[in-house]
Length: 271
Ligand code: CIR
Image (cartoon, rainbow, N blue to C red; front, side, top):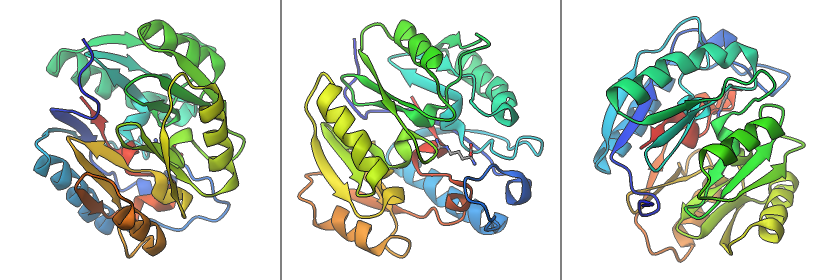
């Protein structure tokens, strides 16, 4: 039986290692160095926001040899009591999945499927679940074989692939802001993805166009929208404020980890 959309009881998060500053993967050619102490403060505010929404927090310790380990979303896709543990697209991130798998299986009692095929890759940041179907970004990190394994793991839902030519993941610029409402960045790649979703998805969604692509990464958790902070994305924060959405909202800071392409969704696995 499918749970109501956006209802969760537990969040898995992971601490920030010092190595995030120099060694985390980046898309930009020039590194803008993460202030690790500030990143930890922002992460704590994010975790507190989830706690305030009623979630139990399970925090894995950060690992210095895994600089991208705080981005736990990429390690698994969790839906209706089953977790598909992924095979991340970048080889430097493959070691992250072991601790995540252990906690999902042993501590949280989920049924775990592990993507082990050599040719399959997937980052959870490419997997958008609407409550009714999945969209999977085909990016540098996620491929067709990964999407096929997702479809086999969750046979109750259709899986539609969306090509991503630029940017890291589908959810970098397209997420669910509320039930049946998609937040989509106004940039060309985001809009292209939205046109694919609209044309090829099985269900209809309203769209909330967000001026900054990075701010279109928001979360709908237990009836509340978690979104970007006004001092980071003034125009986009205003869009969330003035949109006629019938849900309470909370702003969450994410300035530091955004420097290494971290977004709000990527910092937790919601169960
Ligand atoms: C990476 O490039 O893999 C990390 N620096 C950022 C991952 C962000 N993940 C996500 O948005 N789901």
